[in-house]
Image (cartoon, rainbow, N blue to C red):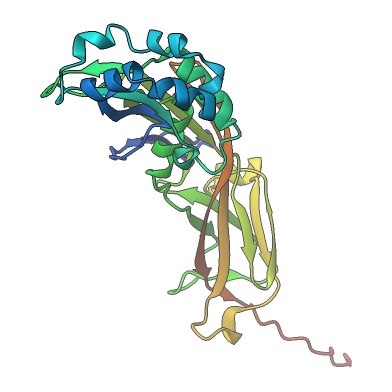
Length: 295
């Protein structure tokens, strides 16, 4: 996984920090080869007439016995083999992602059309299953943990670094807060690339209102003249909270797309990270007096 930080570098450009991490995920293919009957069992099934009876009763997708024999090339060559196995193409919706909108029927039909039973002699490895791009992308994304956002703010007054009631409090993303995450995963010959992008912080302060259309920039004298896209105005001090600080909920929502080398492409459900930080808010006291009469 590679991520680009939303933390601004002080000039307002942001995105200067790139970090990466490696994760390992287990993924089961939607379609694979499953161990089936021995060579002797398949030959007996065809030659005893049992295949004719099963075909009449079970249909087997409308295939005649002769058509089914074409799926087992040279099956008679293995008629005496009680150890080697035929491996059968198999598909199951059990291994599809919850938000996968594809039809298991369509997936299976396409897989069976391209994959017939395979003979595997005793002691040899079964066919390696191919993981399709959509399944691989979902498994890779599920294995990744996206860091929650961290922020800083200005003004910071006194020993506790308090902002002030009624003032514009600048807020900006810091550290590893990602604005873009890219995940690349490979299984067999298939590689999937997942890209998650976010455009802003969503701030929900207690006792205040937030306006945020981006990730903010640090306050400085130069930036003060430019303005910021991320502000909170607190309307009450933190004195009534138990710890003397005001909670601020922070969310970042990511739109997710993926592509894969097998031609798969699409979108995934929006992913949102959530955390809560605290900002001390102080109130400046002012004294109102009625002027005395001047002599």
